[in-house]
Image (tube, rainbow, N blue to C red; front, side, top):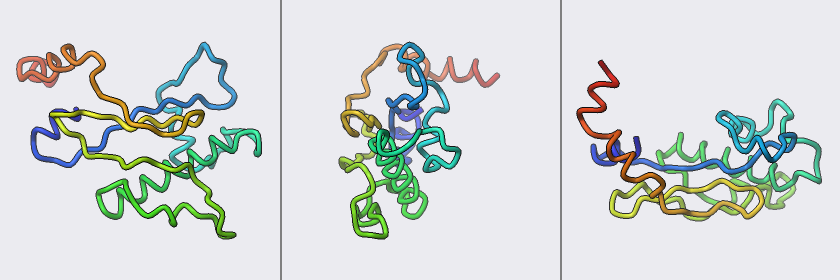
Length: 143
């Protein structure tokens, strides 16, 4: 989808969520919807107790700030001071600059609580994704 919207001239920011919830075993990996606990600042308590899970809490804060930046300005990048807690301490994982999706150099921002967020090239299954984005396939999927 990033390729299609970017080709249509829309600003696109792509990410891959790569952090398991604290209470999931390693074999389960990261599943669809796991990022929601982070997106909404752990409102359901899924991240576990602090301080053992402070890295997840900081990542959650950074994800939330990025979303709010995007809602306000259509750009997830913003001022790090917005991540500060009321007592002045940094309350979020430092985020790298999140570039717009570029067809010539496609990149995802990877949200990872262990190593911290980082950029990766979005080339996984590039040929297969290109095929899925062809007019013929899209037409069949929408029929």
